[in-house]
Image (cartoon, rainbow, N blue to C red; front, side):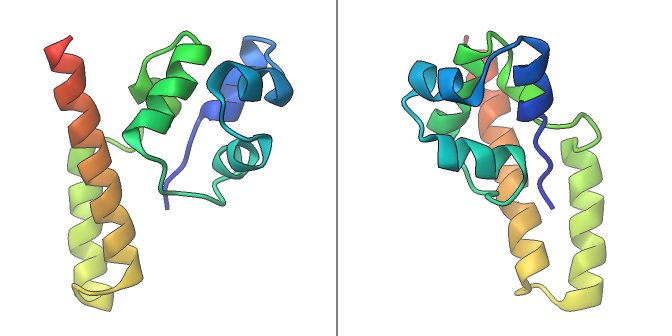
Length: 109
């Protein structure tokens, strides 16, 4: 459900996964799982470390099609299809919360 843009940004900046590990202190295995969307629940702190190492904005780590309003619409559809307590709804809800928290932190800067 959550699609990260981390690998594309890293490769554009010619930073190896090994180097990103050294810059962030985050294991290569975890970074690899994030880049390949096998892990979808990073903390805000983790995202800020990655964004800082890549010299980019945290919001840029996500594909732009995942804005909050579109996610809300998708969540409502998933509620209709699978129920409010479904795994799909929980994943979307977590992403919305994460994006809102990032947005709030960005406004404070």
